[in-house]
Structures are given as C-alpha cells and as structure tokens.
Length: 266
Image (cartoon, rainbow, N blue to C red; front, side, top):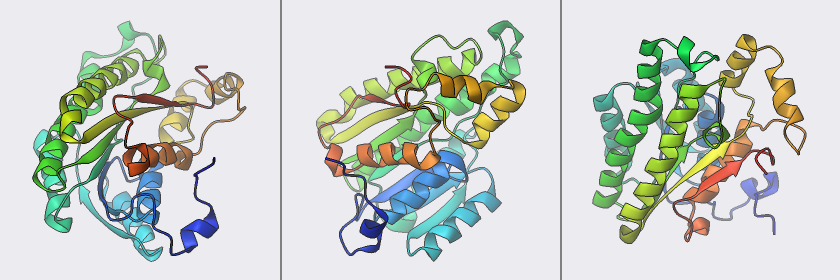
C-alpha cells in the first residue's frame, strides 16, 4: 500500500503524518533540510529551522507560513556546540516541547584521495558532520525527556558511508560514524521510548552535489548510470523517508540506516 500523501490529501482536513508534533531540523535553509521543513509543516508539525544563513532560513520560514504551516528559525553554526544546544533549547522555548528532530546539516569535502585533504578540512568535517550530530542528539534527547518524554530522531547519513568512498573519503568516514552513533543511541534510548534512525540518501539534486559535479565533471552521469531507477532523487523524496521514520507509523522501527538510493546499493 502506498502511504505517500497526494496533493489532494494535503488539501484535506485529514490529520497529517506529523500532526501535533514539534520538529527541529538542521541544515534547513536549502536542499533536503528545506524540503523537510516544508513537508513536516505540511504534515502538521510545528517546525524550528536551523542553519547558518539567516536569509535562506527566513525565506523557507516565510514560504512555510504562506502555505499555512507553523515555522520559525534560528541561526546556528553546526561547528559551534553551544550554538547547537541553544538552537534545540529554542524549540522548547518557542513551542513548549520537542517531539522529533532531523539532524540533516553537513559539510562536503573537496573530492580527491585522502592524502590530498588538508588537515584543517578533515577537522572541519569532523566537527560539522560528526561532532555536531552527537551534540545535537544529546540536546535533543534531553529536550524530549523533559517535555514530550517519548519521540524520534533521524540522522542524515549517506550511501557513501556504506562502501569505500575514494572520492570523498573523510566525508564517507564521518557518515559511517554517524551510522554507529545512530545504532548505539537507538539501543540506549529505546527503553525510554525514544527511537533513533538514520537515512542514507543516494544521489540527490542539491547544491552539495552540484558543487561536487563542478569539481568532478561527469559525476551526475556516472551516478545516474549506477541507479536502477535511472535518475537522481529530488530533495523532497529524501525528506519523505525522514518524515515516515519520525512519524508514529514507524513506531517499531529503531536503529535502522534506511537506504533511500533508487536501488544503487541493491
């Protein structure tokens, strides 16, 4: 059975997939994060968007509100642990609770072999792509415990974490570590009713992959050739998977790294 809501379903009075929930999303100014903000709000959640760029956040927030959704935003640099914790606290201050979180924000590395990656770039990838996920989860678990008491977290990983990744070796390594954090957190917090999962997107048309294409011409053509569905994903398709995992319809799913890759890893 296909549970993906249609346009008509969005326009109806039926309860949304995330109705009544308060959601926190990182990297929400563009790409998958912005798509998630629009989708989660459309599905009934009150959403707090977090990212570095105020103008992008404001634009997405206004778009959500214009469509009838409930959203606000907070500027947040994922490299600043105190700022990440403050952003999560802001969701509780605004809405009185936290139910769900999508840790989506990430940085990309310049493609190339690992010995050509500057140490400073490696450190930045660690801080943004791994440490910030840990910091976010710690703050989110505390907020869920203190308010909603049960809830769900989804971390955005990558299919590049599931295999050798010679073009993006540090990026793939950080995302593989995110998978481990996700599984450990699922076991730790499952008894409290807090589910933790990850999604592993394949090729998705975002600014990040366009930047990678600029560094490695022909990348999109190579990616598409490896995808059984014959195309890359739209950001909304990745957001749909995150929304389902965060919803009560996935109430018995935790500790999973869900591939959303058009069959690329089949």
